[in-house]
Structure formats: structure tokens, C-alpha cells
Amino acid sequence: MAQHKTRYRVTPQAKGTSARQQADWQARYGEDLDLVKNQDHILAYIEAVRTAPTWSVDVYNKIVQRMGREGRPIIPKAHIRRSYLALIDTGEVERDDEVLLRLRMKPTRTLSGVAPVTVLTKPYPCPGQCVFCPADEAMPKSYLSNEPGAMRALILGFDPWEQVCRRIRTMQRTGHATDKIELLILGGTWSSYPRDYQEWFVRRCFDAMNEKSAESLEEAHYINETAPHRNVGLVIETRPDRITPEEVIWLRRLGVTRVQLGVQTLDDAISAKNRRGETASQVRQAMCLLRGAGMKVAIHIMPNLLGATPAGDLAVFRQVWDDPAMRPDEMKIYPTGLLRGTELYDHYEQGSYCPYTEEELVDLLVACKQLVPRYCRLNRVMRDIPAPDIADGVTTSNLRQVVQESLWQAGTPCQCIRCREVRKELVDPERITINRLNYDTDHSREVFLSADTPDDRLAGFLRLSLPTAPAAITEIDGKALIRQVQVYGPVVALEEDPGTRAQHQGLGSRLIAAALNLAAEAGFREIAVIAAVGTRAYYRRFGFELDELYMSRQV
Image 1: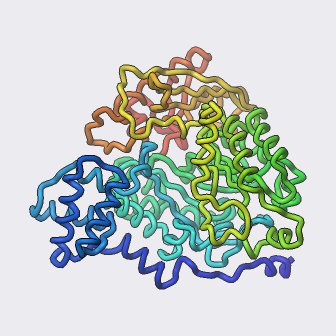
Image 2: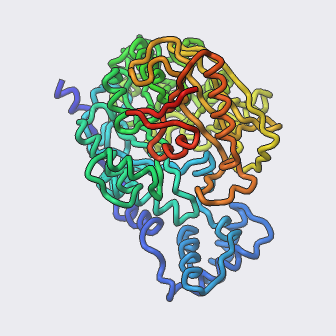
């Protein structure tokens, strides 16, 4: 066995730590420009941005090109924005909010209502032996050192405090509010790491959000309730066969509210051929335990595994929605990437594996997206693996856009949460309608309450679970359970006037009031909520009080 594992071990290429990449990374995210030396150039950029009659990416690119023709240096937008803020602080220029808005980097990053901060754990042995997984010794299992987020973690030595601090600082400098942080902890199989490491890692992430160190995780949680950067969601990723009742309780003690499960397939024969080491029965059990504990469940599905066919993949996808034991809240579709140095690549060289063509993959993804119900958020349809690392197969970077265009042409636009979010659109709270969608699972009657605009855009939603089976955690047994409250649109700081943006318009209050009424109608006397640490103060406004792992109140 040891020889077999060594055979498919890839020598780390350290792509993310080459001198050039480190220099590029530091130039973008490192120290500010020398204002004394570059002030004239910065002022020229700012004036061009301010006076542009309209604004778009193309307009900005033309400004940069014009500056180059004038003999000025090409300055990254992040540096221009930070320098502008510094000049405001020194009184050199007056603040213009429109200029700051135009200089915001990656505006879509916080359009879902929270500021996502992704961190990676250190490399650690994974219990899986999957044939498709890369094994870069410098990275956690399944990650490559030149993936954007992985590169950052590698350069920062996988230090949780450094990673969180750097991401928050970068988002602030690029114009994003950071008082509502969704923390995503990625890297291999979380549940296989030693628990003392897990607790330390989470505590240090909270220390970074709190801007102060705590002696214990419990203290860090308490501080975060009123911290500058409040945690509104904590996400980990793990394997379904690692989920047990004890593991679910442990995850709640850490503060986890959402779990990403590497399901990949529900076909046991395909799973065995790819040496997944788990069964569809274990997936169903994990889904039941997590949903019963109030967790949001996101699953990963991988088309084009060894032995798979487009027809078989579509059948698996149908099963995800037809089987009451499945029906996840979120999903990522990760078409199998053929990477050199993996066992799957050996099959490819031997002629026993062939990647789907782009036409086959697009047709499959179109068919899959047509099946996604309105209560699910389809986060991705392609993994962000750099194209040079793909030995063969589809490398189209805008695959989701290609699929979306095909759906619109067919008259069947995707109905998933992500495709319906209001994002940058203006919202009139008086014209919002609360709609109800029921669906059954093997543990509960689930109610998806959606706050819809007149043109059927999604301004927010609430997930209410009305259990029909005992809970694995006695604290919430017999209680209705709010699993998620989400209001969409650009992040609005806690003290900021929302204007016509969806956040802070009372949509959350309306959704919670509706959930309380439905729980009472269903005969429940108590209702609990799986509250992220930084949302506890919010739920106290509605009469919820902290018990041990959850908050609850009488209906």
C-alpha cells in the first residue's frame, strides 16, 4: 500500500511560490504606493475616474490605456483606491463616494449579502484514495499550489490568523464592507484533522475577526458577538463517511453552520471504481444527521468520473432531487479535471478514460441546471483549476456563461437561488412578496420562504425545518428549526443607511415572523435557530436566547 501511494505522489512544483508570482502577489496585496513619488499620477487617475460620464470595466480599461500613452505608470486599481483614501485622510482631496464605488475591486464578491473569507488548513493525510485527486505535497489533499486561494495560503504558511487578517484588509482596501464575515475553511477532509488543531485553527480565525486574542474558543465566540467583523456563517468541508452524531455535536461546538460534503456520485459502482471508499447509504445518513442538526448542506458532484457516462451522470443528478434523503441546500458541480500525476491520468494514457468534449459537458450541465429546484443554490459548475494543469478536457473559463446562454435560448432559465438573487438591483420593500415552497426529506418537512420581487428576483429567504423524526441532538429534539435566514444584495454595514438595497429593509424580520406563524400552525411549541456566533445579537431582538449550541424561544 505504501508503494502504491508513493507512486502517485506528485513532487511539489511550488507554482504559487515562484519569485515572479510572489512579486505579483505582493504588488497587488502588499504595501501601499509611495504617495510622495506617485501623487501626481494618482490624482490623474482619480480625475479621469471622476469625470467619466458612464462607468464600466471597458471605461476603466480605456482610462488605463490612456494613462499609459501619456507616459504614466500602470497602477493597479487596488493601489489607486488605497492611495485615494490616504489622500482623503491627509486632506489633499475631498471624498467622493461615486469615485470610491467606481474603484471597488470585484464588486460581485459581496453581492450575496456577506463578505466571504476563505482560508486553507495545512497539508494533512486524507483518508481517501480517490483516483482523480492530485497529491501536491505542499498542499492539503485535492488542492494545487497555483490555485488563487491556495497560493495565498501557501505564501502565508497556512496561518489562520494571517489568512483572515490579510483577506479582511484586502477587502477593506478594495471597497467592501467587512462587518459580516462568512468564514470558509477549506483543505482536504476537515474531520480527519486532530481536534486540538481544529479548535486552535477556528479560534485563531475568530481572533483575527475580533482583532484581539482569546484564551479559549468559547471566549473568542463571546467576543465576536460584538466584534468589528462578526461571523455570520462558518463553513467546513469533509467526507460523508466522517459524519457521525458525535461529529455533528463537535462541529456545532466549533460554531459550524454549513457543511460541504464531497459526495461526487451516488452510483456505488462508479464510487468503487474511483476508490472513493464510501457508499450512497453513508451519504444519505450524513445528510440526515446534518440537516437534523440544522446545518445547511452543500454537496459536491463530479460528472465524468472514471467509468461514468453523460447519461449515468444525469441519472445521478435526478436522484439528488428525487430522493427525499438528499435534496441539498446548495451544490457545486465539479466536472472531473484530468491532472497529470494522478491514477486517473494512468487510465487516460492506457485508453480506459476519456474526458467529455465541451459539447457533451455543456449539454449535460444544461440538463442538470434545468432540474435544480428553487430552494437550492448552485454555487459552481466548474472548479477553478488553472488551465495549464488540465492534461485534457474542457478548460473553458466562462463555462457557466455558456451554459446560461443555452438555457435562455431554450426558454428554460435556471431557477436556482444564485441565478435569482437581486444582486445590484434596487429593491422596494413594499413590493416584496413572501412565498412558500414545501418539500419533504427523510427527517422533516422543509419550508423555503422566499422574499420575491415583482419580476421574480430573490431578495432573501428563510429555511424552516419542521422535523418528522427525532433529532440527534437532544437540545433541539421536538423543536421547529430555522436553518438559515439570508437577505441578498450588496453588503450594507451595520450602521449604514441601506437606501434601496435589500439589506436592513426589514425583510429578515418579515421572514422570521412568517416562520414563527408556520411553526405554531404545525403544532410546535418551541422553535430553535442555528445561529452563527456573530448573529446572536440579531436573534435576541426576536426573543431567542442562547441555550448551549442553539438559540431558542417559545412559539
